Length: 463
Image 1 (cartoon, rainbow, N blue to C red):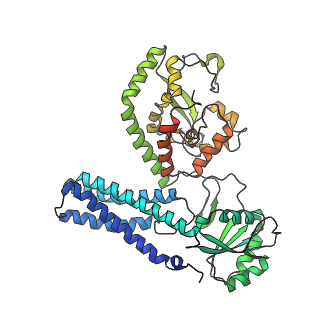
Image 2 (spheres, rainbow, N blue to C red):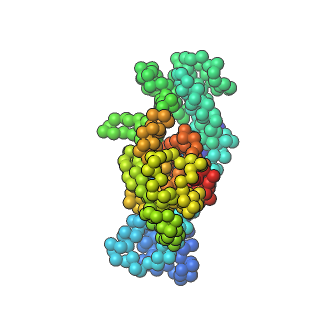
Image 3 (cartoon, rainbow, N blue to C red):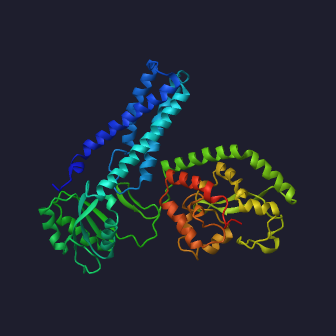
């Protein structure tokens, strides 16, 4: 056994401790919510039944959401999303049971809301703290997974350098085997040699994992290596050479019993699609209610600024290239495009009315798009939609331009809060859009919405 192997050898015990900790958090949150509402009075029997049901649901639901597994090397946003969903599911089931048993009126809504809020916040904080603690331990050489890499081509160098550059992931490369020249990689003290020596090394040393880093075209070699290692009980992973592709939300799945590598797929499948839809409906409804006085005031200002309708309607493209009618407050005279046709807006554009120029500069002209979100045409967060004429122009000029249509278009996005809006570099804007699609999570959406309030409304590139 390698030094500092306690956490690894007792990982199952730690997961049971995590389950116990989650239950204690649930009970503590229940108590913290009960005191402000009921004081020190004993917990009524029907409340006790609800708490017992909540504990049982937590154990089952959290397991169903795969929260009790290793999150090594995985971004916290994924664990954040899974925790929020699992905790929300627990309470959704509790509320459903209360409704169908006609006991919902006997529970305090203030207590339930505070219990949900306190517990969810504590669960996320504890998990984030544990994540940071494990990262710290791994950078100090604790809680490591000891691996050997069997490589061919540039993929081996890429894997080796990536793992070395991420010590917080906790992978210790003990050996590296390849038939290539190794003058392009600095192995340091890592044991190395030709692939023919790999099996002897595996038999003589205790490892946690073996990584095969090879191009897909070497399928015969991969098959021969796996056959050669058939008596080795160590976990074996394959890292195929697909880094040269423009990948979106890549993963591996099983369909009809067949292993399938997803190279470029939308993240809005299954539960993610429902999460995104609920997020859009709730937040857009809330925002429209809050801004209704501002909305009505702008309507009057636009109406008196120049003759014509209050809203400007324009065809745009969204998810899967579907056309929809996007709404904005009208910022130009109605005949502005009669002679010019579709024009890419730039800082020298003088067509806007006095009120329209202010609306553009502050992005207030975009407010009617929350109606598009309610209709399901758009999302609050996503790549900005473009007019069909410009899509036809850019799809052959900008690499991977059409991949931004793998999700719904948004009012704001990762590109916008990073300054890539208006007449700016399209290549950089698309790179930011694709980063958002590839890294989508509920946490990222909330972060973008929060940052939009401070960075995205008024900007030098808004005109």
